[in-house]
Image 1 (tube, helix red, strand yellow):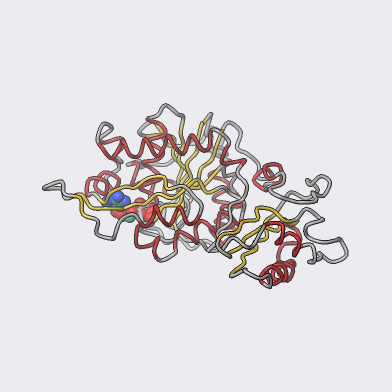
Image 2 (image 1 turned 90 degrees about the vertical axis):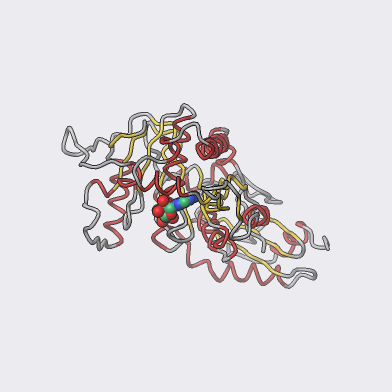
Length: 374
Ligand code: ADP
């Protein structure tokens, strides 16, 4: 169709006012306008302190654009910007000074840790932790100094997957020394609380546990800290994503879940808090028969690549369903460590290289917010 232009959208948004302050475009609040086949998306940058009070404004912006001829759907998202960071209002606010405005800039960085990358999934059991540990080992195999933070506080799996047991020590009774194995530093609540202890954490306790594992640990100098996020995209995950100064997020999904939109939810969650999504990893992508080596695409293959394209994010890797991956990660010797020259290690190392490239070039940090048009 191509009838609807960014100018038309901005013109419509000039008629939407943020109370007495002025119109959305004049105030420089609109960014990331995207249109595709009649579907429109944009972000409204707001002061986080005003957050929920602005829902009516968001809706009215959506409605206004929806009324334009040729528009089929509109998604407007509120995104937080650092209070007072915006210079003179941009008349035709396009992407705007996103990097400076990102709330990530407000979340205190961890001294000595160059980049923090989250590994997340829409739901449990898709291989998020397996991917996190092998990505971390892949980054280390590529010569980087790496740590793993198991933020899956309800179901920590890093003790099992790294084969580490025992308790972390502390020299001063306050800062914990991380555990270390396979050349990476590891911290998990599982080292502090036995795995079979039922953990009924109240929200604030979870947050303080996470903050402690992030900040009260002697991580030393790291190129990258890989954070294994709790599964799902609820409030708890959202808060965590906000609490950690993330350089980017990798979404792990299986082919079926991609179809079921779980990956989309993951994507949207990070976009909501302005964390760049580096891309999608399709796990259990296809099955390699251990006997004959035949490749069977049980779940229908290629869906993730198409979906990633649709969502405007990168398709980072496809990892086969292979018993060797399960046995090694569940046995404490993830495949990248167990078979460093094998085909799976190669895939994880390539994934690691691409993730590092995206983070290291700062591309991830500079990228304007990508908004899902569906
Ligand atoms: P999540 O962190 O998403 O809950 P896990 O990483 O714990 O998922 O994986 C769930 C189970 O699936 C584990 O037993 C793990 O070893 C296994 N698994 C994960 N990825 C693969 C794979 N590509 N091939 C075979 N088994 C896998």
